[in-house]
Amino acid sequence: MKASASVWIGRVLSGLFVLFMLGASVTPKLMGMPIAGDILEGLGWRRDYVLAIGILELVLTLLYAYRPTSVLGAVLFMGLLGGAMATNLRADQPLFSHTLFSLYLGLIMWGGLWLRDEKLRALFPWRRAD
Image (cartoon, rainbow, N blue to C red; front, side, top):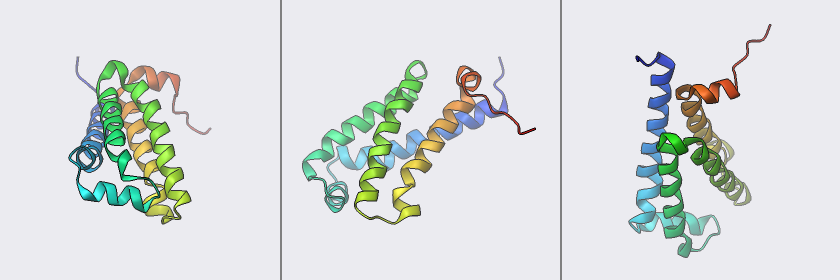
């Protein structure tokens, strides 16, 4: 069966989200790069949490990438992204570039999933204004 254009766009968006999370967030934390600890300290967290957050992000990314658990991964990821947004807000970070970045990631994550998952589109249909 041939996939539609929207399914392919959803796969691309989901793939970009997974690649971003693995490359820009998970890898620096799991490899113990100093920048990961510096960022957490700047937000008021202890460096001790870097590895735990990196492992959590890796698990959630894998849940999201695996089709049977992708919705569970997305729901759990939104909890993590909401916490990141709250942390940036509390730390008085710039609104559009830092605080709302989690929202942007969430929109890409859910948009990709919605476009590639027919059951999710049926659950949350796009309706035109009449």
